[in-house]
Length: 519
Image 1 (cartoon, rainbow, N blue to C red):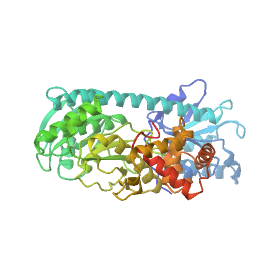
Image 2: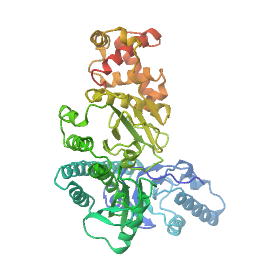
Image 3: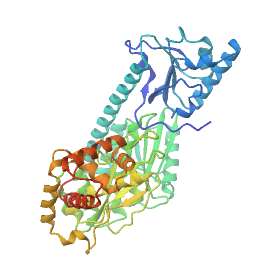
Image 4: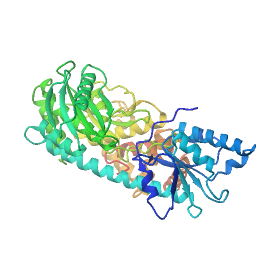
């Protein structure tokens, strides 16, 4: 039997929330009634739905497959027992059984089987279509996701404001404790407390926190987690503090199953790495970088921040977390060797087989890395990297990194770099102003249609591949075909002509340095 996949990053919906809706009329008949969480809904009349389950869903069935069972009541009992056991093994959170048009009541043998295997069984009345249940779940997921994103945004602002106060490390710890409703501490590798905030934990939690700090401080993983009854612990190595007994780690003890707390703690770990970093990176550069990040987080203007970053060149990195990893953004920052990282809004991982969201829509993680540092592929992440540029050209580098990430996702590469044209490139033969004027005139029919320009950009970059363009943009391949046909009609040109493609690509690249096509 296939091993259930880990649940998605979307917030769970309590089964009790669905049961409380009077318009659905659902009734639980068997299985545990506390702590049941749903991530999605799947309908199947297959005798063996296991290959089609991802885990965490409510499986809906009208019992059509029961008609295939022969041999009387004993055979039906055995079949239903195996059906419930397979559904539990596949990771389904609950089973919904629809009354009508096949059955007038839920088979008692199914109720008994679900009780034996600890599978919540819900009766769906005849007047409630399965689509109503699906709609209710997705509405609840959307509302919960909005609450999470609001909380993350407020927490990020609170942490950034705390980092700008006197004694910033202590202020960040206090702000983090308020945001996660728990205990936060800076611990050395030998367990010594260098600062703490929030209600003191019990002895078991304190001992576990010391063990986690030692794990991340001994040169092991950059983050580690543990779970105790009623509490979830996470530890983050602070970059720039070395290894061994004096290495600093941020340890957070929050409520169990508080998903946003992990993301909020990752943001705090990046800030605390900045705040504590000058101990191993002395000089005004580190202080300037810290001030730059804090001002950016507080909404500072780029021209105001640029002098704090100094005259050096920077590479912009856009990163997308792969669905097979739960590593926090703070771990990526440590691996890249930079504290200048924006964890961004958390995005749900795309279900298996689905296209990921277009990274330009809301990049999961963005980072600034000094040009002299080598950027390599990182386990669990897909990276798009810009060419090194001075501070004044960072907006263009940001767009180039986003384009590189789209290409990496489309080609399933771990890392794609954007390369600057060499001194003998064809673009060097045309003055930039002339190139932009020509590009604006050529692409004028697409003005006011940023989706079409973005689609054309990706389609040309991916050599006219419908599937790869669909993957890069997070849309269906038929939508790509429709958009490209629309582009060809608006431009009144033949997009199969290589000369036309070359000229359009030249125009798009000229405008890339002026303004992003999708904003």
